[in-house]
Length: 81
Length: 157
Image 1: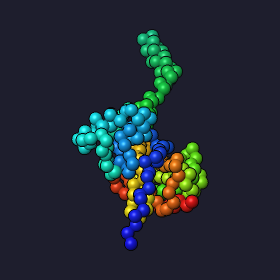
Image 2: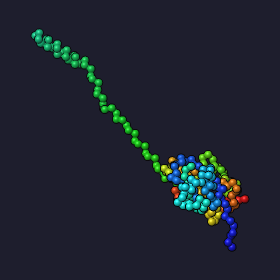
Image 3: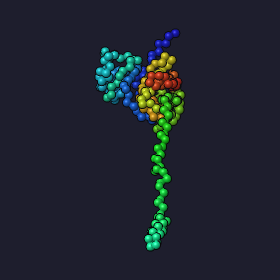
Image 4: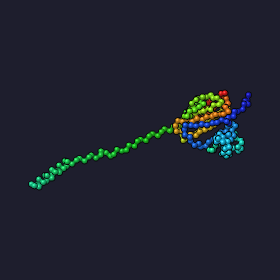
């Protein structure tokens, strides 16, 4: 019997980290879209400001045609704020 | 006869003068000691970067290691993964990929780019204000895209 159970929503997960090692300048920061994400939510997560979604959209115009349509598993470039 | 006496006196005086002459100090036995150049210290052994362990828990210390180990968590817990490593690298990217259930639904993915100079600890954490759904989870750690280890954990109501 197939399960009709809905997938949990993890879009409100807050993630972070730190290290005892010195930080190196990342070549490029990326983020993998999770179920329930929107550009505004991602902007809020990285910049603390949902209104900065356009920065992410502009950096990913090659893979995002419509800013209201992003898909789980897409890897987005996150420009520095 | 007088000339002979004078000659004898001169000769004796010369001998006496010669006898009193101090012996010059000996020449330095050798050139100044050569400056000893210390042997160059052996170059420190370069240990390539590698992950040595991954630990899970509910809290970390200031040294980024787990202070409260756990593999079972409550819905409101913050879940920490501490990645111990050794070796050096000018730049290495550690990525933590958190997934849920057998299907591996993506929970979160984050990364840190570090320049380790020796043993280090790097922590990743996730929290969910609305509470974690009960079930089985996994965190996978990769180094520059190559798998470096994984840990399973569970959330119980």
